[in-house]
Image (cartoon, rainbow, N blue to C red; front, side, top):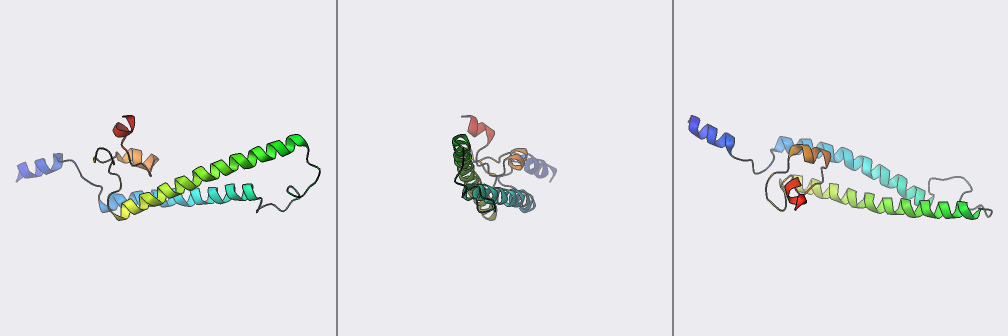
Length: 132
């Protein structure tokens, strides 16, 4: 029996346990909440929906201020697009958790190290596969 036990102990895991998946889910939900709040802030800066001042109605802007304002809106728009993509990636990670395929590298089929998933919870590639 000890031979079977040691053989099982050295066998590589093919997926994370349900409790580990729940741990990852909590991390993802936290990041998703923050990402959605950031997205809302970015979109309000693009559309001025959160502003009660005369910034968008004042007829006497200086040329440089208009340029800076346009650039800021453009940058905020680009950041909002990136944030939206990040949100979709986190949502896809939640689906992989439900399917119990979360944390499996899509290239190698091996488990992505837990440390990587905790820092980049939407990762679908191991460092090994990403380096190729």
